[in-house]
Length: 462
Image 1 (spheres, one colour):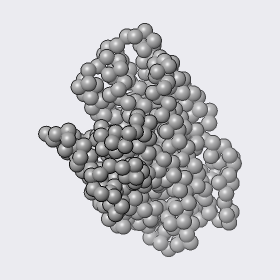
Image 2 (cartoon, rainbow, N blue to C red):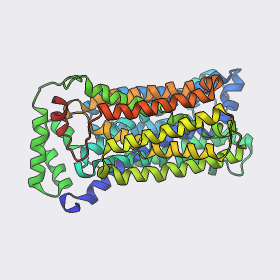
Image 3 (cartoon, rainbow, N blue to C red):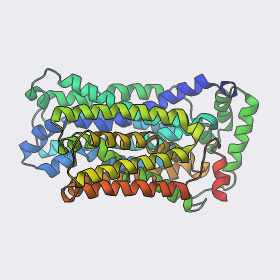
Image 4 (cartoon, one colour):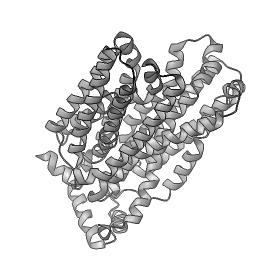
């Protein structure tokens, strides 16, 4: 397989792009170590309550939705590469601004409502970076990668997201270790946010060293540049010329394609892939894992240890997806994962209804999480990056990613009140969504294993 293309060059480009995924995970998880400090510094001194704390903690999600919406416009207007450079800049500004929100306008260390709003502004800036990266990183990798290994390479982006989360957990722990609560509440939380500036700066510098995607270069009428990139990727000018002709054929069919140029079904499939990825409840399991374990009877230290176990499960099962996605295909992995998630969630629901707490709960949560990480976690991003025809890919990915972040916000924000009503029904709902996700994939999602991005035009024309 290596003889078909320049694998070393492709992997190098992919690793740079996955830094965007790492920052996606880093930015969304860095808040976890700062909640108590933000409450002590920004919320309590201003006479605010839990609603203000919750809004502050989740404010980046607003930026994620905005970034998802903007990703299509920016990736089509600026290109995939320069949009990732914009994302890197936003990550960098957000890291420094969130750690030092007093910059220019406020007195250092003096809390006020204005300072709280400024902090939220910087977090939203970072969220826009996450929204852009979540859409454009898989798109960039998908447009660079040869069809034979595209699923594997795009899946590395999901691994980078999880790895970014794990990295920031250790960074936060290292900053707080051995320090007093007073120091953490005054200074430590600032270092946690500002630490993101290091990978953000590295990402920005490395993005300058990678090429624009050949698909975008063709859309921008830079065919010679596109041929140069394809020749480096394929290691063969004749093969590069053949791919370039296929790309050009998909782009000259219509002078100006609209998002529904290939029908509504492809857009609906993209949206439902995103919505189901969130409605099965994975972010509840990730965001609220320690709370879930504590509510089921685990002590605080034990619940944190179980969360670490889940983190390791996430890594192992994501690697399984990376190794199998281009051999087994997208649909078999998604359907298998949906079945595993349904079994896990329905079992947890039954345990909750019967107030049974024990090792069985952890086993079924691991079954659920592992099933997600080998399927819907990475494969959803693979499909979103490849399923749309060339002419509408930027716009369609933007719609799908914006829908994903909106669904994320809805599921995460409704979990606490749903749990107050009934834990058993809450987990039963996520189990039902897992069943529906399997039926949706079986009935509506086409298999894309081994197909080129140019094949998508023929697929949806049918």
